[in-house]
Image 1 (cartoon, rainbow, N blue to C red):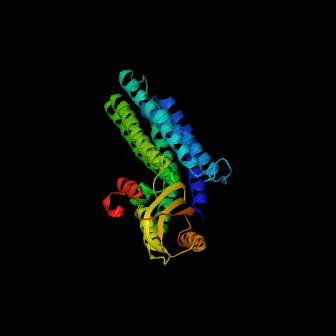
Image 2 (image 1 turned 90 degrees about the vertical axis):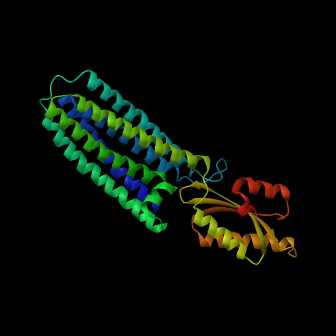
Image 3 (image 1 turned 30 degrees about the vertical axis):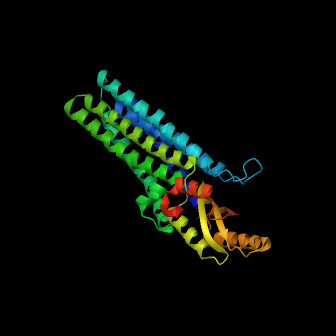
Length: 324
């Protein structure tokens, strides 16, 4: 299954789970007056809106390039994912903190339906756990394809969708246990402070997740370089080509999920004619595309290695090792 199809399936599974869980948590929270359950309901509503945004991201990023966007719409996935992170912060974290403070300062009058909370949390754990398994399966598959560990794949993936779903589902499972702990301690001690504290903990957890996801999306939107292993492989391959006297500069940028733009400044063998250089550039472009299916665009620029201004730019960007 292609990465885009896997991402869509992961989002749809998470969306279905969150819709059902949000309704159940809301009913339980209203019946029992539990701030933790109401916070978890807000958490699930926020996750539902997030899944809709992520599904939009997957669909819109697949549009082909056109005259207005010659490099395609791949970065739309990063934009909508950034909005999803902001949605978690606003709809989930802010409401959970408010509900926690409200529960502590204005305890609920009755908890006669406390048993409903445990039933709903149990059902929620099953649904959220199913979604988490799907997200984990995708992350592991992509990690194996890229020869990364799961942790490295989560940190460095150019697809924010499975990372967002995995993180949200993991947070949801942790939130369920926090809510259960708060409800249980409230019932045992008779103090609503525990319920409110659980809501506050859920709010802080959501805020941290939102900030982490937002930072990852920001880096991708600004324009992150390709996987360092790919950059190193491209560099070594270019220097091995018979037409290349020296590779002066190499720049890469992710223009979307599984889309890499490559710009190479090359000092070609001086004896080559203009026609020879044209053929060499075409052969190099074709060779790079064959070596890596993620390479979307290739630009090869002939330059002299002795250009002091160019060397200074490379020095500022990479440091002396690559500049030399």
